[in-house]
Image 1: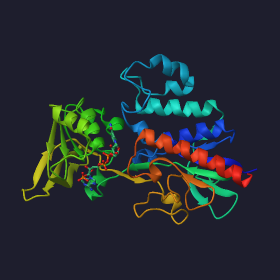
Image 2: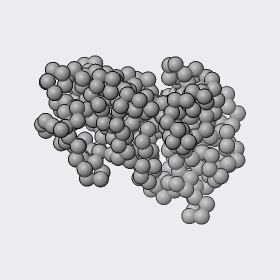
Image 3: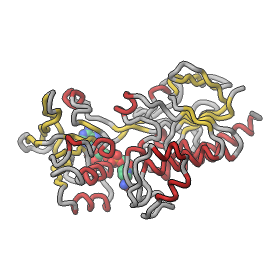
Image 4: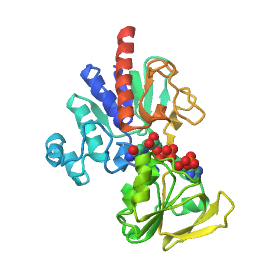
Length: 348
Ligand code: NAP
């Protein structure tokens, strides 16, 4: 028997879709992704991008406060044991994701820790192949695979991945190699400020390298960067080469000017990227209509329908504009309602 609905992904959109689908008695099955070294390196492990952040200050319903007892009480003990310790400053990204996952499971959602590598959306039932080769059939599919962090694409950057080059300050920032050392963060958006602010707890100085003379970050975040005495912004600069050697890893960066200044070398033992994201849609190429950037196209205004019958998209995988936890959760809810109504209309 095909499943009624399979959800691919494990960020806020996926779990919200699962909560709604489960409560509609669609018995959702979630493929939450695989725990592999490649996914660790690409930032595509289960629980998505929020699991790679610190405090979440803008998700409604979670003001600052000590959630310790709530977490102990709400989350499955086994899962709770492997979570990072609670910081008593409101909810963190990993905590929020564990809470959403737990909520979905409480209503009967089944979870498989593997990823879908191939799809056949040409007719009913829809077919999904997992990385272990098993094939699952479903009448409806919700794609909620999100997006991952971008890298600059320099050869020298690639050479020093895991040797000082990272796209996740929260995952790697506390490593001994970065303690009390100067570090660089690339980018001028909210993520760059967030990473720089976080790294400033460990580093001697954090240089934010931005290619223009004005931050893209929101006013409140830009002010946070300016107010932090450990953050120095180097304007109108791009990385030309990551400097280092095989034993020490990253030792610095050579920066080109985007105006007319001379090259500049900055000593640093780490380079953290915060330059935007790429949607996780490679396995859907040729199967669903996408924008040239790879983000999935919604085919009906303000609905989560895609170009394939019975396939819906939610969260960052179809949103290169808002990209917030709360908007992802919102579209996850929409996708579950769209799928439920579509299944009912088809009598499936
Ligand atoms: P973003 O807003 O797209 O910013 C990306 C930054 O990287 C921009 O400053 C961009 O420069 C720069 N950049 C892009 N490609 C580059 C390249 N090849 N070389 C050098 N610099 C490059 O992405 P984001 O900061 O990840 O934020 C994404 C969304 O998440 C936003 O909606 C943001 O508000 C949200 N977010 C919110 C929070 C929060 O509120 N706490 C935290 C994190 C993210 P230009 O400015 O010149 O384009």
